[in-house]
Length: 282
Image 1 (cartoon, rainbow, N blue to C red):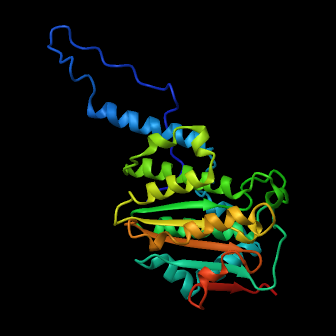
Image 2 (cartoon, helix red, strand yellow; image 1 turned 60 degrees about the horizontal axis):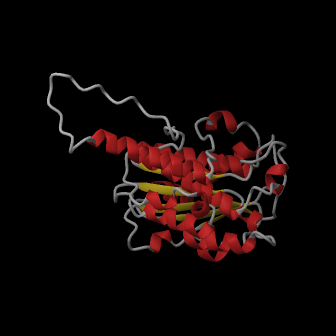
Image 3 (cartoon, rainbow, N blue to C red; image 1 turned 180 degrees about the horizontal axis):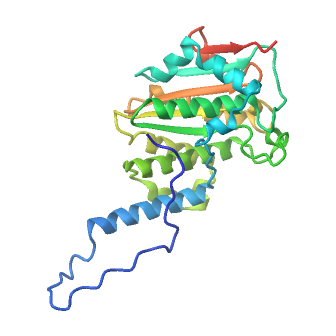
């Protein structure tokens, strides 16, 4: 079970090399050990993660976050539905979309009720399986004042993809999973490009073993249906929602999306009554 909150050594943080015994023989042709290789690999992962921009949500305190408000009622109602249980319990890749029937854009207690639902879904997923990773993007992630979470210029598809990639690197590091190929992305000029971020993400997902489950939990996807964001968002969502069709992806990859209104950008991917929960708060 993996939560995206472990730390990496920063560039320059290295342990002092052990002093060789003056009475022992040394092999000058072999001055690196397997431990050195591991340290180097994790240091590289930390450097790439920093270049992507670290945005890690806190999903460790769901019981403190979801209080006795509409957010709590929504979470409890949705988690009792059969579709939610299937998304949570299935051994296959699953997609689930939850959105308001009439549309709702206000925040309650500083956090969107849908953000709390995403926190709850992440918490449930992590605690339901042994080998699990969750990547979380919440609409309230950037807000100082609650309403700014919906208007922030930082909430762009490229930023979201950078956040998901940094979380994936963190989760792979915690689970001691392979991350071959990171060298290419240890460059700001490379990692700032959204196409390269997608390639990095795909490269890492393809290295996750068969017995793992990965969930991407994305909050309020309708936010991205606006000029200046729509094209990049379409590229990101098409990529994420097609991972389960990638023959080189071995792990089970599931998606959990929420929206305050019916999301035009992604709705076609959730066609059918078995992939959508419509919440009526009237």
